[in-house]
Each structure stands twice: as structure tokens, then as C-alpha cells.
Image (cartoon, rainbow, N blue to C red):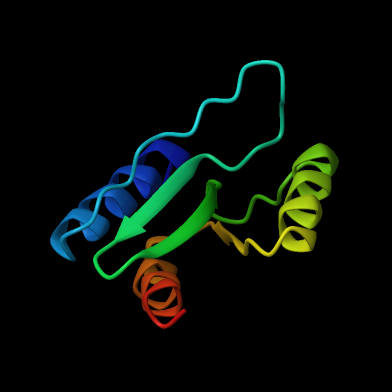
Amino acid sequence: MREKTVEQKLVQAVKARGGICPKFVSPGYDGMPDRLVFLPGKHFGLVEVKAPGEKPRPLQISRHRLLEKLGFHTYVLDGVEQIGGILDEIQST
């Protein structure tokens, strides 16, 4: 399965829960997560999407750590079976 397919499934799942999942583009600041997740009730998350079995690059890991220090959790999604759990976790925060 390709990264694009996993990403499309994430977007569909967020929409099914009444939220939006825009692509995050950050010119001049590489390594930021791929998607922003906004769910009803002021729930927010950042998601790095990877093809199954792939891992974030070192720069991406560095950005995720920076975001964690700022209080924002970043989820790494590399399989469609993880989508429900990630969205449940976002909704519980």
C-alpha cells in the first residue's frame, strides 16, 4: 500500500467523524507533519503519514520532538489499521 492511499483513508475517516484534515504545507520549514486533524469539540492533532513499514526521517523526528516540547503530540501513521486508534486518542485529549 502506498503512502497516498493511507493518507486518503485518514482524510475519509476524519470526515466521517465530522472533522477536517487539511494538508500541512510549511515552505522554508521542512520536516513538519503531513496533515492537521481538526475534530468536533476543539480536538486537534498532527499526523505524519508514511507508507506501511516506513519510518520518519531524522529531520521529521527532530520536528516532532520540537512540537512535543511545545505541547503538541504528533502521530506517525503507517497503516490504515492505526487510523481509528489515532483518531480516538485525538478525540480523548
